[in-house]
Image (cartoon, rainbow over all chains, first blue to last red; front, side, top):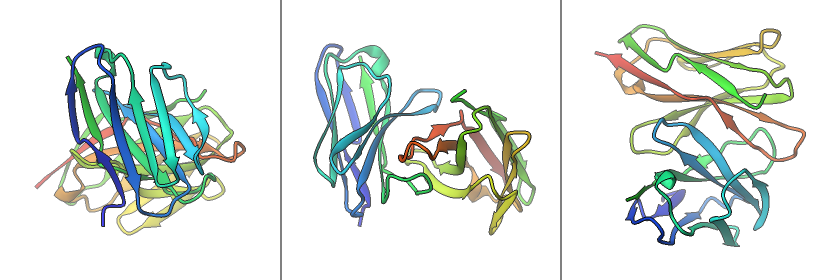
Length: 114
Length: 114
């Protein structure tokens, strides 16, 4: 019944490693997003995909690469992890790419880089 | 110009009281203003949203008041309950891009004491 799911829920890794976070939605939505929430709870969009095409790409280091194999999945791959990448990463989805549409968030993945 | 300023950072309200959270923006191109509620360990969830062509929207105990000329909007929680204790985020997005890119406020941690 989970609408937007993410794996893993917790990820602890060392600097320099490469890691991936997976996201899946079973809502039939066309648009998916990745957000980063820092230690002060500030929530900022990173990427958005609509029908597997990248539509929003914020100023994010190119060590971060989203991949959308199909409409229901949007994965986030992070290369050469740095301490500053520690945060909670949220995946979200929405039915339409338009303005007034509810975004449904996943439970988050807490990434800790040591 | 893309910022949404939110205050207060934290708020303690007695059960049954009124919680008020304020947000302000600069970019007059913003035309959709949602509020999201986030419980600890969970992803944000849409609470209520408003377009700037109305001055107030009410859903149960939650009301958004919108002042277009002042570029401010606020969330009022009437008869606040301990279950309302959460972090609240205001947000804004621009419609003319065709895609929803939410800019979030910094969040308000609300604690409703029994």
